[in-house]
Image 1 (cartoon, one colour):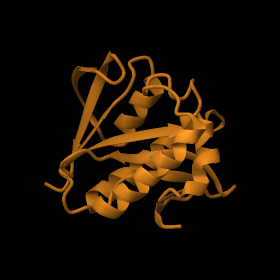
Image 2: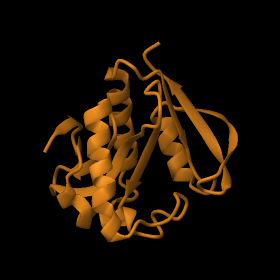
Image 3: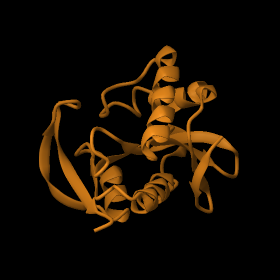
Length: 169
């Protein structure tokens, strides 16, 4: 397993196919994924995990497994949706419900910002959040992203606050 970065409580590592069952606790949960396009069925998760492995190998950035160091368990995902150019990447994070309210999303988002700053190509981190998810909006602000405007997102079929953070200028 490839560990990329860690904090006192968390580490981010490249996903493995063996993570599918644990990832179902967040990506397969309809409540967790309600505003992110819906839950992913367990049988589709190995393909998702393989695509994130491949993205990391090809681009040096991806979405990563978030491991709680105290328990050694996969509790969520955090990283970047890389589409097209690596100059602009979209920050995302999802956590199992039993990990909510512990500051893990903020901690993981800050680790992701460090990864983006260390990447030679990234110039801009973007993110959005469902308007009702005040805690997620708070995470984005704590990670240093600034509100730009409200935008329509086809994948979620709603207007959402949109944030950006310039890096490596």
